[in-house]
Image (cartoon, rainbow, N blue to C red; front, side, top):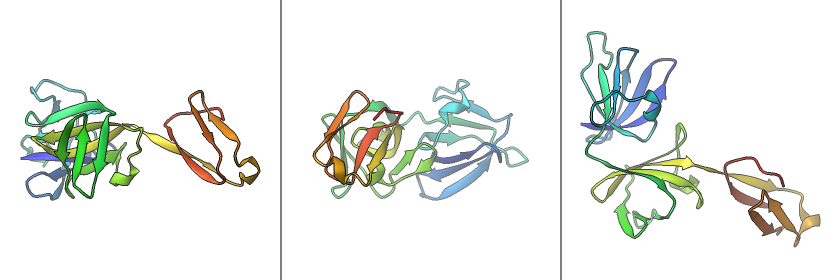
Length: 185
């Protein structure tokens, strides 16, 4: 059975996973003796085990602590996906020139939290994991934020410059989507 990581609590040393077979969440304990491994079962840093990754589990010891957890070797994993279109009504995601199925069971994460599809911005960079033509999980790896203009009526029809790349007309009180970061305005 394969699982999608939904949450890792380092303080409690627990990992919450969603079973791909039953779509049921489970919670497991881990500790310093738990072996974290890549898909070839070589030692792998725990920093790679983030919400959205698909993993397989080893046995639990007598204290109900996972003995091992490793990255799945049966899924594909696309990093740095920037050329995509999402159509939740049709249940489809286009990556480049290929189309993949998304369902209600497809999990979407931004950082450590699960989010809705509409929280993915057009400029976000994604990591997408799937099997065959089915998408299992989507992770926002380079996010976005918003600059909210309020009480900006005086500046209507003026230009705003955000950083060195974003120039737009002010249309009144408005929300502008920007890639994550700090900008002079």
